[in-house]
Length: 273
Image 1 (cartoon, rainbow, N blue to C red):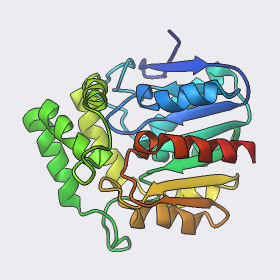
Image 2: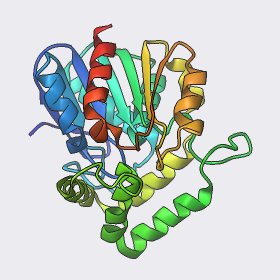
Image 3: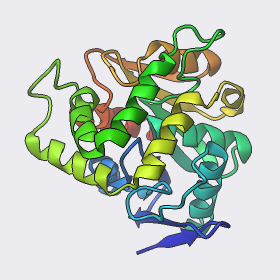
Image 4: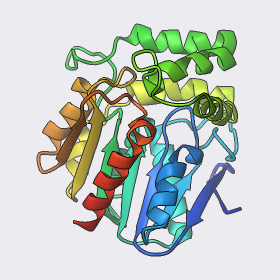
């Protein structure tokens, strides 16, 4: 299994499948590269080289005590891309992973990046602030941290209903998907899972948006209960005026699964454009 080692000794696991133009996928909280299996199979079978890593603290990567900040996440991605030797890659970030994409593009000045896609992403600024009144109240993230400390397995199991929108659409996914999602989430360490709540909610990516000079696709569900569209997808589109913005009416946060056929087709069209 391929790993790269960060300067602090953290080992970052990644998958590297197929041949052709490269697409790198960055996963959401609290999951791993495995959340992308529907996309990696689809694009791998359609002539693309697909790469996805497990963020430090999650999946098969090391679980260090610290380093759960976006500058470090960007450095970890740079190591993977360098080890894979890819050029002209499309970076795709889901939810928390959208921040990975934004910070990598900004910090590394778009090196290696041909295109970018922000999907259900926390960018440009998630938490409510005086200059971000549409953001999510800080109390929400305090509650997430409290839930993790009190009973992480049950909290993450309950989170699935919001993630897939089954509290509003009970038949959106199977119980097997719920079980798989919980299994993936519990592979992560509690420290990284806890610390990343602050990272994805409090990091301000508004300055990073100016670095998106490449073709950019933004996809967001109008019914996203986890990362509401107004302060995130819609705001990112305003800050990246040349971006293509696709709004999926009725789609929840995890549209990469609930709307996988449409999402895969839209992303494929973007890659081929």
